[in-house]
Length: 142
View 1 (cartoon, rainbow, N blue to C red):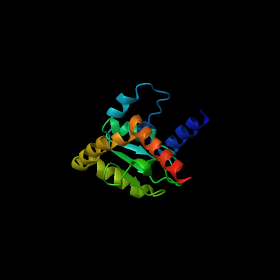
View 2 (cartoon, one colour; view 1 turned 60 degrees about the vertical axis):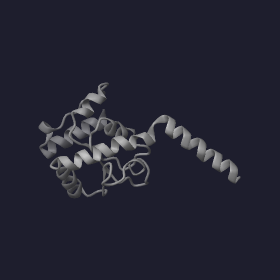
View 3 (tube, rainbow, N blue to C red; view 1 turned 90 degrees about the horizontal axis):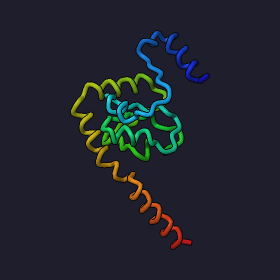
View 4 (tube, rainbow, N blue to C red; view 1 turned 120 degrees about the vertical axis):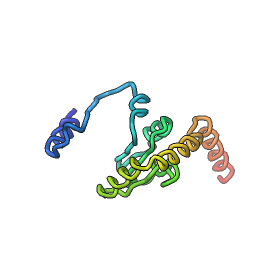
């Protein structure tokens, strides 16, 4: 809650408090995602990116910031194919990317259609099969 209070104070200082909503804990995530025009993942460190997969499943275009240590968004998003990866710490570029995507319905549709197809790679059975294959290969090489 201390972090939320800091963010609320920041939004007041920036004069955007009337455009920012702090919802707290929610259980209706699919409905919230469906209502979005765009999903933005600003995390600098994101080991997996489940929220990205959830947004893709709800056919919401995704823009994510390039993580500092790899992983997460880079394992899921193929830049320009099923989502967009933005440079870190470049707010102007990120804003331009988001604005451009919001103004281009054809690009949003291309990204979300491809993302929906790509989600099959992350189905639990697919992931399990790949893990078994990796472990088998490692066992053969030892």
